[in-house]
Length: 397
Figure: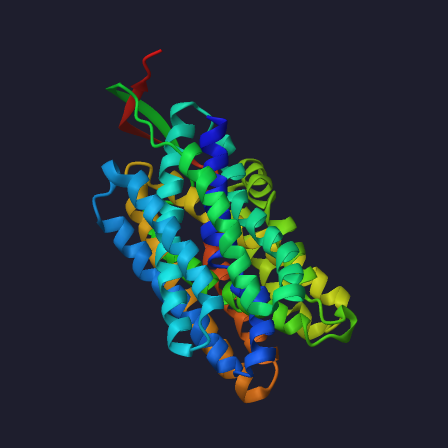
């Protein structure tokens, strides 16, 4: 069980922390050396999230239940190759292609590793460990925050990409041997009365809209926070310190917010996290100092994965009989928001020669998303009993 959990965590480190999010701390290094505009930086980020959107849609459609492990391994290989490709090529077309394929493969890794690990946790009645699994994204972000400055010092930004790909190869080997897609030998159907808590199902569209706005807003900080920090002299050219803070704050966030939600209510917690994130996004506009960026990084890291955990858990509580379809909708609209956000932010930043308008716009978008949720706080923890048929799995000993 522990090996499967650790294998799942490492798969998120590879596909999310490294292949997907390492672009954020390496971006200012690339811009400094290659002198491309914020608009191009936005296009590169958008190509990654376009790949993620298409991957998220396909992985929900394709019948992969019996081939999860094989497809997961193939996706990890593509994550490694595209990470290396960013350092091996110095052409925009190659970068766009690498970022697109990286986003596509990261969606498959996230969904398939989640499916394998969460199925096993449910079988072992350890679903409270899911926060540890999603903490893998924060671990990956923290890890890149440590390694990128060292790699850049000796090998420049190209070496940073290649060095991260080598690290990914090592971690992929561990995932390969630890993350097993084991199925139990026998199953039986059992009717179980499960209390569903939360708003009525007719409220689901508002949750989907709010989550889409979250994807549109959070990704502006998620893409450009290091570039913004690099404009402050106090960092002495080493703004990746901020990325380490994001990772450290993200690691325990899923467990903390899930625990609070069980006491406060999931809708209340989701509203609070989005309000905190909106404030964190706009802090650099109000306080463009080292302290301001540290506060922004802490609030961003502490909320962005927490919001994902709360939103998907809330969806599964509202519709326990059909949660996979609703979570699929949430994932798709979130990915669409991520795709649009960097594109718009890049245009605003290029036109104004700073990130203020992009950050203000992103904060407003997340704030509006939180407002969409306010009306349903009254339904928090209101029980509705639903009888569903679930598979009870038995293992041979």
